[in-house]
Structures are given as structure tokens and as C-alpha cells.
Length: 50
Figure: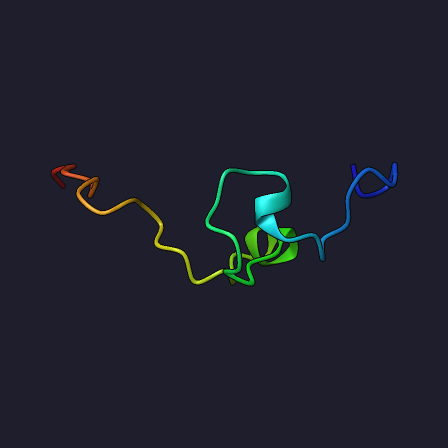
């Protein structure tokens, strides 16, 4: 979609996804895994046994 010019990696995440406005998180942060968001929502931790 970036190559087609539909969006840019600098777009705020709330432009394309339901998110709280003003977080400063961009699509680029999500693609580079640098958004600071938790991997899983609270209460959804893996209970996998090793």
C-alpha cells in the first residue's frame, strides 16, 4: 500500500485502525515493532506449558 501511494509509514495509526488519538504511534512504529505497545493485551498472557 505504501508503494501504491495509499498510505505512508508516517501516518498515525488512528488514521487506519481504531486507536486512541494522539498516541504518536505511526504505522512505521508498528512495522518496526517500536511502538511501545504490549505484545498481548492485559489479561491475555500465554498459559502455554513447556
